[in-house]
Length: 123
Length: 91
Image (cartoon, rainbow over all chains, first blue to last red):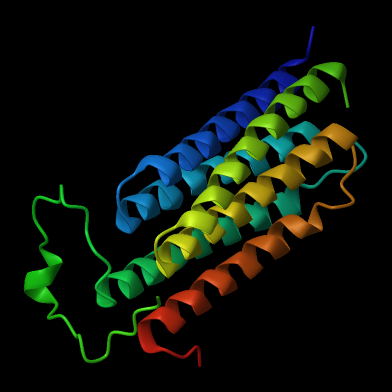
């Protein structure tokens, strides 16, 4: 019978893995690049943070304790992933990447004028 | 590590490898450059998870430094791709 600490570590690892699988599914099946960023930015961040926390819990109390490096990794993850996703979404919108045809309303278009002269669209 | 956590980490490793295959598919076939950048972001996160699960499986923290270093490198990659898409140059 596994100990409660092992059960907690296993729960964190399995939940994090489930969220990463959800991220992969969203990356495959969502219609446009902004929806895919929605999957990658939220479920992906929480999934990898839960996996790191599960590893920290699994090694807690043993000879090689990694809580400091683990918490550092979680901190970096929470600092960097939203910023990276925001930068990518802004770049994709300014480059006139097409929205899905099922998009109902585009409120950013009213605020932000399009800049076709500066758009540098790859491919 | 105990046999219970070995079993759990094996299951997690299989699921994470399937996720990395999905994001590689999106990286190869993504219609535009931003789709590939998003797939790269997810792939960096999946590799962080794979390193963590392998640490549990092997009962070794030898590679745990790669976790936070890979987080920072993935951010730099995504940020520079975004700047290149937006302005046509990185710096």
